[in-house]
Amino acid sequence: MNTLHNFSKGIIKENPVLVLVLGTCPTLATSTSVINALGMGAAATLVLICSNIVISALRKVIPDKVRIPCYIVLIAGLVTSVQMLVKAYTPALNDALGIYLPLIVVNCIILGRAEMFASKNKVIDSAADGFGMGIGFTLALFLMASIREVFGNGTFCGIEIPVLNDNHVSILTMAPGGFFVFGLLIACVNKFGKHKPKSNNSGCESCPQAELCSKKGGSTLVKGANTDD
Image (cartoon, rainbow, N blue to C red; front, side, top):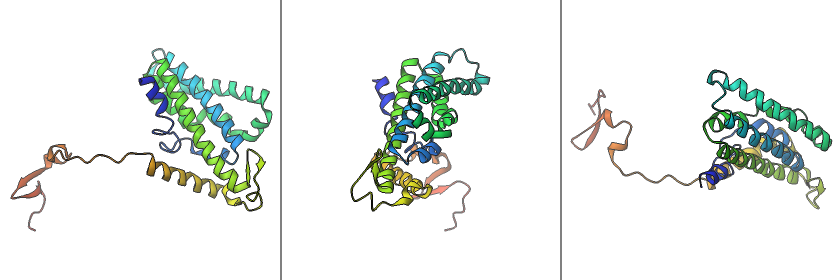
């Protein structure tokens, strides 16, 4: 159950893009096309899983003082391997992603999960965390790219859509449109993806200012405050 939770939390509850607001740069840059978005998501997911596994396996070996440089070296090696595979088997995708593919090295999602989770947990749990975060990242990219490509280009995965192809909103494929769709999705997640906090009627004992307050004559007085009113 713990492994399943580590996997599922990254999809919606702790989605790295729409909840934690990480990886914004590649999200905005590669979400103009569904194919590019899926390619970036798959590459980042593979790096996330592999980096989490390796860093978790070496967490007791890597010196604490140099852990960040070590993480970056490991991630850079994995990203280089993924980039070589993409160049060899899907050169068109490599050209479309451009500089954003090698920049996965400095993607804050990958380094953040390495520091916050993989370096403190077991290999299986770290692999599940990386897979879940990768799926969440890919899902966010897919949603953004679908909206921007369908309504901005009038196509889906390069296939023309009748009516929309002749009545598309070109600004959605530009930077302002990317920020608009990004903000819209974050607003939707905040509105529908989170539960409202339960009301707490436990009294003054639960208040962080309880020690500064004193009850007197039915009114709350703060120590040192002016009570002339």
